[in-house]
Image (cartoon, rainbow, N blue to C red; front, side, top):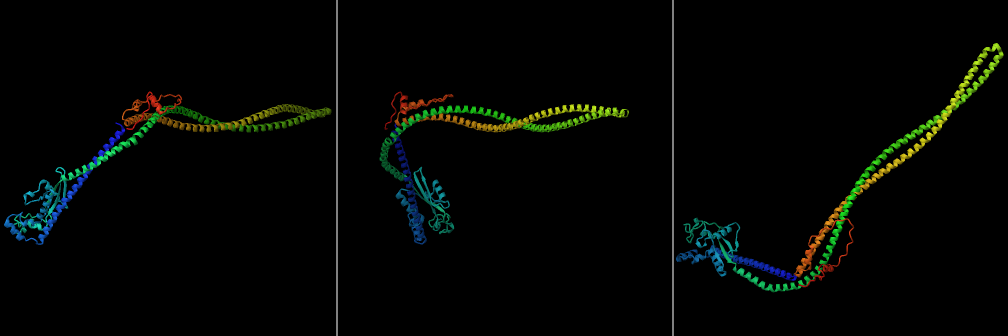
Length: 558
């Protein structure tokens, strides 16, 4: 069935359902209003009878009736219900008024009573239930709709007033003194205000149902032409405003679904390759992070070693500075030793000169002693001894001078060597200071390098986390792309079903949708660079190619 026919059919069904519902509601409303109107009518009839009862009761209290004369008339005829006395009883006057109205309106009238004097007024089981309800406190009316009997029931209680007790009150107050009322019936010892019975009216709902059915029929006669006109307008509007635009929209959706499916496949393939690349990048970053961690550990150890070397270099520099200072002191001492040796050499020279002069003097003394002869013999001996002493002094002075000269030479050599050693120690101290500075710079650089590597390691760790997240996101994107591709296939199937609904027959899209509904294999996992995506041909061309040259699908008004 074409969509236009479907729309008309649905509209007719909707109108029929609305009309049926409206007629049903109308029937219910009319019936409910008829029931309420009947209830009010029944209530008015009973209230009117109660008013008659009140009027007769008030007339009796005021002495409007000659009871003795009426009683004599009753006793003469013996017919209670045909006597005038019977008609002056208030409740009798009331039900006489209701009976006339009930007969006129075809109602059923009952006066169920407890301890009724007339057997036909004894209550049935249903009326017993109604009397018990009316005996409840504050109950002034009973109303019910009997669907089984298709009738309504209305009852109002008959409550005894003070004048009623003359016939139904305490037997001790009997006017004849024998516990009976003036009519000869036993008094029941009722109390004022008690419910003695009820005025009960039953009315059939057949008339109400007839009115409701007649209203439904009249309404249906008016609605059928309107419904027919609405159906024709719906058919015309559906052809003009729904089918044509819907056909054009379906063609656009068909083209968009084809392009969306191709794009979804390309996105799924690209997302899969992106996920694989991200996973490989994450693995490489993890390896780089481990390598950087090892380099960071080695750099920390180098920094610690550089710090220890800096400490040792500082100690070496301090030792070289101390050795240089001691060498300077030794050079100074050696200079002083040389100066002392020079002074001793001068003293030795002076001693040698003194010995030489003493020897000369001894020679002169020996010469003079020889000249003196015997007198100078002792002086000659002394002169010889002095000369021998002078010779020994000169010999010792020469030996001492030689040794001092040798010592001076060695002292000079020691001074020269000390100078060289001092120069070497100065150079060592200079190089130790330079080495200390270089080691300090190395330690500082190693610390900075360790800090930098730690920062790089932290950055690589963060990059690794980001890459892991990107890999997960890429995998989710690939999954979403595959889901998008599947949804594109479902979209094409939905478009095909829509074409079937619009055109009323399975078209080209229904066939291609069945083929497209087959499971789509996931894109192959590879690491090569993705090929350039070819541009998708226009939708009509793709459809024509898929159909083997068949012209594109067209839509006609239905």
